[in-house]
Length: 118
Image 1 (cartoon, rainbow, N blue to C red):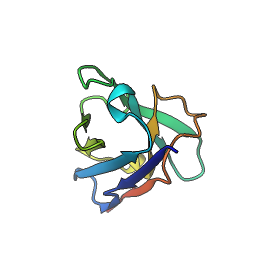
Image 2: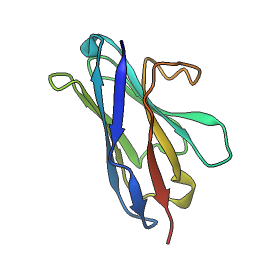
Image 3: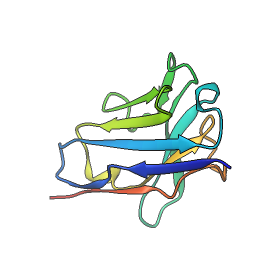
Image 4: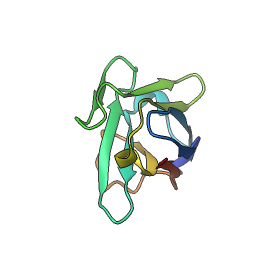
């Protein structure tokens, strides 16, 4: 059974930083691409970033490119998202998901909430 558990969310002022983590279990983590998705209050779930299985390729939505960095540690079955220069519009619940960023996937965690406000 795929299990994904996010952590690291919280409240931060605009311009601040956070690091999100995702602990994965129940599948061969090192063989799968992994993604982060986000759902802002009252809005649809959107794709944020994806990293290839080996960690050698990463992709970002235009809204976060240059500010967020996705990474992974296959030895620890862990996925990360470094959020820098945060904006109020980055507020939402961030989900770790198995695969290439299909927002319809059921294989995602329960999410960690990020609030960016002054």
